[in-house]
Image (cartoon, rainbow, N blue to C red; front, top):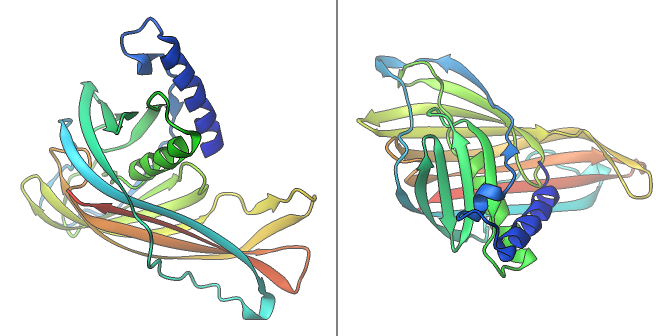
Length: 277
C-alpha cells in the first residue's frame, strides 16, 4: 500500500466530508484498505503457566512519539559499509491519541481530528483500515500524520494464538505500509507477565520488498546487500490496544548496485516508536 495512493484517497475523503454526505458519520463513506495478513510463527511457548495473549477493546488515552527517516547517497564501491548504523539523534513527532471502540473489533484512533479505524482480531492482526483527515488540513499535514499512524499500526504487537508463558518467542512476518516498502520480520520474546501487563523484547530484521528499482532514465538499481540494527522493549496492558511504555527502533541499510560499477547507492531507513503513556 503506497503512501501516494492513500493520500489521494484522503483527498477524496476530505471532499466527501466537505460536501456533507448523508451519513451522520462521514468515515462510514470512506473505502476501507485491506491489510495483508501477517505470518505468525510460534518459536517457543515458554515456561510455567501458559495463557493466551489477547487484546481487550476498551477506550484509551495515549501519547506516542514516532520517527521516520530515509537517507540515500552514492558511495564509492570500495568505501561501502554494508552494516546498518544505529539510528541516533532522530527528530520525534509526538501524537496524542484518543482510542475509542466503534463496534465489536473495530477501534478508532483520533489525533487532532485525524481519524483512523482498524478492524482487527484479538491477537492484534489488522484486517482493514480507514483514514479520514480533518477539514482544511494541508497535504503536508495529511502525509505526515498518515505516515505516523501507519507506523504505529505496523509496529503494534501481534500475538500467537497458542497459550504462552514467560520466555515464549514468536516471529511476525509482514510487509510494511507507506513509503518504506520493506518485508519485516519482528521477533518478540515474552520477558515477564503480571496479570494483564506483559513485557516484550522486540528485535527486527528487514529486507527490501522490491529487489530491483527502475530509474526514470531506464537504468536499474539492484539490491545486493542489506542489514538491520534494532532494539526494543515495550510494555503492553492487555486491556488496551496500544503499548503503554517502552520503545522499538530499527534502521535498515540497503546497498544497491547500478550501471556504474565504481559506485553503489546506499539507503538507510529508520523507524522509531516510543510509547509515552
